[in-house]
Amino acid sequence: MVEDKKFECSKCPIYEACAEAHAFIFGGIPVIYHGISSYKECKLYRKCSNADDVEKCIMLEIGD
Image (tube, rainbow, N blue to C red; front, side, top):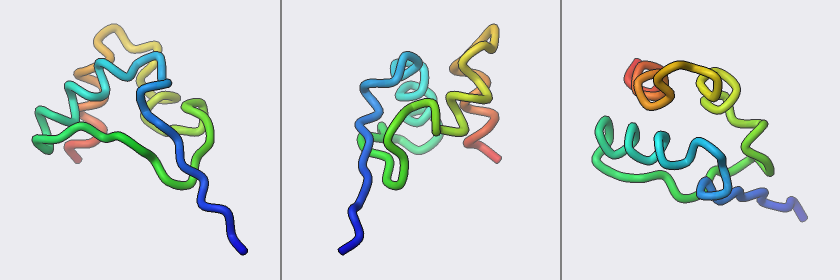
């Protein structure tokens, strides 16, 4: 049996900026990521967590 790893995005330190960026681009907020067990495994966190404008960084990444 394969275990389905789910991660609640609200545990991520950049959750607020991530939620606002997703709401702006897609009209909804992500709740659960499948296949990761830590925000450190999230590409958006690794790429944008140290950006000057985290929300803008995320919007650019997910808008492509």
